Length: 92
Image (cartoon, rainbow, N blue to C red; front, side):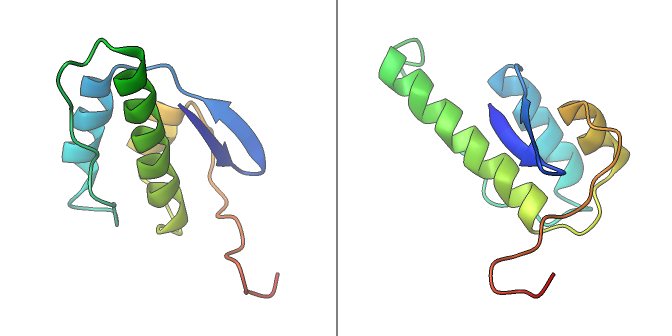
């Protein structure tokens, strides 16, 4: 999964279950989008690509909707600090 954070592209290679566990831990303290569902059969390349895209959209939503992120999210992304990107239409 690739996300843009602090103007840099970060690649996160983790299992679906790790993203799901992160979601369960942060949903009470962060604004989070709906978590993408797990589909069966999950070993088909098309299904795996759809899952990757869903997880990318999820992580982008987490980054977009939160001005500050818990250390747990930064550690998950292997990022030291977080500076939210300016939203479209805002003056920077």
